[in-house]
Amino acid sequence: GENVEQHPSTLSVQEGDSAVIKCTYSDSASNYFPWYKQELGKRPQLIIDIRSNVGEKKDQRIAVTLNKTAKHFSLHITETQPEDSAVYFCAASRTGTYKYIFGTGTRLKVLA
Amino acid sequence: DSGVTQTPKHLITATGQRVTLRCSPRSGDLSVYWYQQSLDQGLQFLIQYYNGEERAKGNILERFSAQQFPDLHSELNLSSLELGDSALYFCASSVGSQSSYEQYFGPGTRLTVT
Image 1: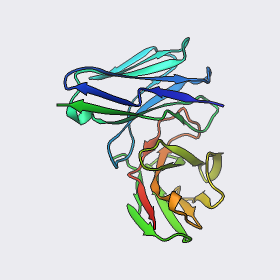
Image 2: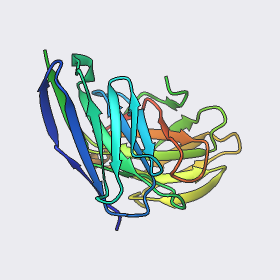
Image 3: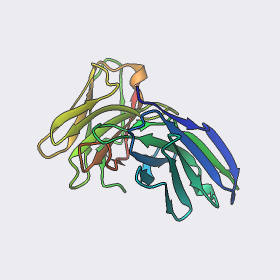
């Protein structure tokens, strides 16, 4: 069945450094890839997404890249700040289906 | 604030009981999704409704059921509760029926079964 693998499960970086989280998907027909940020006890928040017709998308300090050939996509956070500390989930879906396939999450800790 | 509302915020109940969780989607959204998140775990998809009709089922137990009403709000019913049902329950909404639309999550209901 469809699967999304997410790595690493935990990531600690110094404030100001960059963080990269990678997801690999199994369904080659996947064409929509959202990223969610979840702070402790709070709701997942959509922070950025990308569709299969583009290779990269940026929003201020956050960017997502997509490699369709390798079937992986990555979240890049530059100039990390303590408030970036959270769990990040990737997901994949494709037209014609009705649910996201979520990754298992990455706990990011930004050390001040 | 995503525009998705969920009530109640917290619920404490005993094993064997039944509870109902409520979700109101964002204005204009026709789809509602339900997810379960146990402590420090990922998001487990339970079920999706679109404009009143069930569209997709995930890992939803037979003791759980849901429905979406004509005003588009949705309810998730959990019965014969067990300790292991303790979790955060989120609903999310999106404008379309398919998964290629953005989903916006509500604040969640924290269920504690004692």
